[in-house]
Length: 379
Image 1 (cartoon, rainbow, N blue to C red):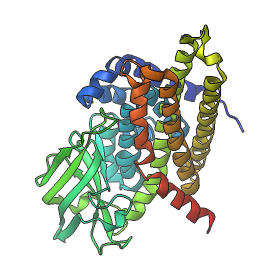
Image 2 (image 1 turned 180 degrees about the vertical axis):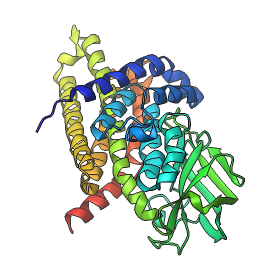
Image 3 (image 1 turned 135 degrees about the vertical axis):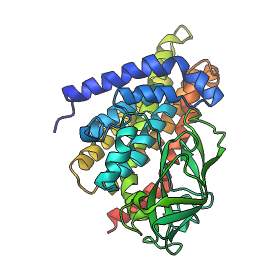
Image 4 (image 1 turned 180 degrees about the horizontal axis):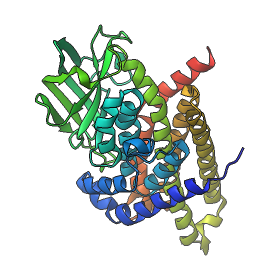
């Protein structure tokens, strides 16, 4: 086993770090407070290959693996988790669904635009009354000749307004039937396809979250991904990789909060010495550093299994669960170490604290991860 980054992985991490410092850090609080989704920053990310990380070069992507993917998300999220979240959703959900289940014609049609950042992708599974219970979705697609007519709505969709194309999973069979759902690609501007309410969120405010609304939206059968009835099964496989994404996002948040707390604890003097020298603070830092190390190891174990093409449902749920809960703990302790200043917007830990919580909810709650893990170990 080798725990060092390869030369390529280190170059990729350095590139992501420089991108985050130059194009993201100067605008973090501006974007957060205005809830601005910075499209131009994502265009730049596309130029650098960060919008098609896992896409083969044949389709305009970077052709990298999951270790590099983690490195990129870690570096970006350490500066602004909301940008990391959007990069993750674009890559691992929308783009990866087309890459994994699209036919050659579909891949050639949509992947080059997504991989270069020319287009931004959205992915729709969740509905107002179906979060963890995706099988109970109400949005339907009914076959009409060579077309499908979609009606319903999806919510909590990353890039629901600004996305140029969305992969949506809708019901084509009976409610609750795992083989009763199908995946389709819907382009922005298609009649009957619109965006609804944009959510006003606690954190991740520069990552746009909104409804997708379908009203007699007609799309050709050529936009169907895979076979009829495969949508839910496809989604579960996509979420296996997506959990690595949220784990990497969590790792970046944890590292950003920890580094800010470490720096502050060395500079803040009380009772004649830096607070880092007090055991109460140094033990917090020790726990934080250990959680980060454990999160990173779990993530790269999951990445290894994914790169090897092995079944990694259990390990991906483990890395997502552990890293997301760890980043909440670390962000909380980072605020505590900053004391009163940690509760102000003058220091970065306030934002890490707000951003962290989504990681225990999005792409499967902690409770769902425990369900996935327990089912796998009890088989």
